Image (cartoon, rainbow, N blue to C red; front, side):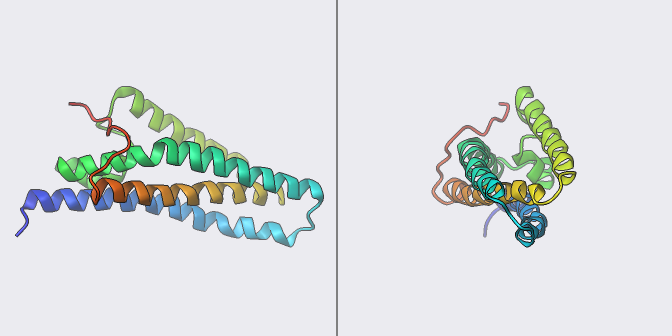
Amino acid sequence: MPSARRMLGLFGALWGWFGVSFLLGKAVVRLTPFALELFSFPLSRRHWAALACTVAGMGYLKGYRLFQGGFSPRIAARVRHLRDHPRLPHVLLAPFFCMGFFHAPRWRIITSFSVTAAIILLVVLVRRMPQPWHGIVNCGVIVGLSWGLASLAVFTFDALVRDVTHCPAEVPD
């Protein structure tokens, strides 16, 4: 029978991964109607060009560079750390722990809060954009977030099943 500590660690790891994945997935679901609404507007060549550039740019910058290149491996490393070193407060707040909002180096905490504030500001600004531009931006965001969800699943699988992490967990000693 597994020990209580091991079960707590496994619960925390799964809760951390699920919580972060849920936040990303919820954003994809909420943005999809706005992206689909785009196609009910007559689109000019300029709109199609903007859509292609936005989807390609967000796929590369947000999906590949941001998520696959940093966010997802770091989340997965912190998920693994939580599994191996469970502490009740960290387990209860596992999604926030995994995103580096606490129990991380000072610069990581500042970065996590700063990026979150920037995302909130961008969401407010994009909401004010008229269609079809609102939908064009949301199509790119959906591509980036979907890439992020996929990379998070792969890196978390590596961390939990293969015991391989691709970056440090950035936790204080």
